[in-house]
Length: 145
Image 1 (cartoon, rainbow, N blue to C red):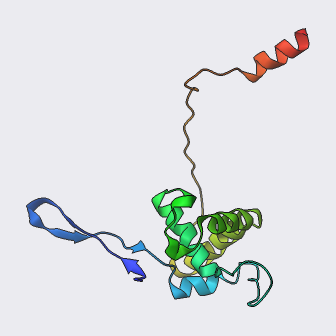
Image 2 (cartoon, one colour):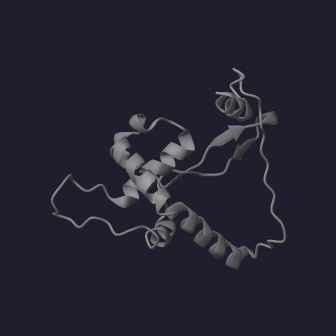
Image 3 (cartoon, one colour):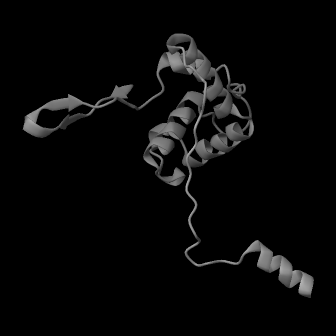
């Protein structure tokens, strides 16, 4: 399987531009850094279900995050969707992705020298389409009874 795939897009006047690459599998250098953060893999020839290598699982998780497809629709080349989902949940609880993000930011900062003088976050809040009940109304009703 190809590691990186690029798309060519036609724009005005029949000019061809190449967009940013889409990562299909995690590159070797990134994997070498990422595997240091992961918990130990199950040893080969142990009792239980067959082992799905962490790298294959991570590729499956990135596929899900990139495409937005359902876990059960994950292509078989990444292993079982339920295995990938289970590992995703376990690694989330162990802060694997948070630690990876921090580590990769430090590496990037050393190379590019990010100047972290400020940060910004954006969000949106919308009214529930069906209205719903407000917490205050629920509290008032319980106190009245």
